[in-house]
Length: 103
Image (cartoon, rainbow, N blue to C red):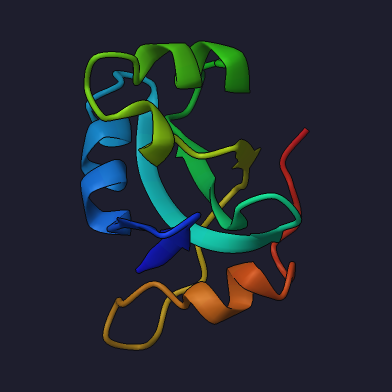
């Protein structure tokens, strides 16, 4: 759970909304420190092969799907998400910044 200025944000809800975009193959939402809010969301997004989408387009897509305060503050495009052997996303690896962005 991400706590943004006293509001609870559940990553699964935000991920579900992002996955509705036709270009998104996989996504993980996690919290990052923020001076004003304490913590804000960041989305690590894997695009489907051949698709090009920028962060602004993706965040605009979320309007009306989730509350404004739940939208990630930033989007990071990655080639894959770190997972355990059981297939669970390793959010701690994303938080540590061990994922390298895709060009």
